Length: 87
Image (cartoon, rainbow, N blue to C red):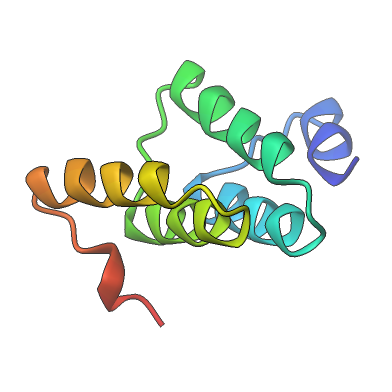
């Protein structure tokens, strides 16, 4: 809803805004919707940062998808990004 209103006015979210939206969705138990936002980010040529990755890893863990959390963590670390250092 917020994202759509922003985009209607010609304001497009950056990685920080996407992270806030994803975090809120994860906390509300809407992890599938949060994952869709990552696809949207990539479609808009926005690269996820360590905060986005940390949010996704946390979302996988909260949804008992530990294998996916571990795999994403390994992929992110192989890119030289440490999602574990965000606060």
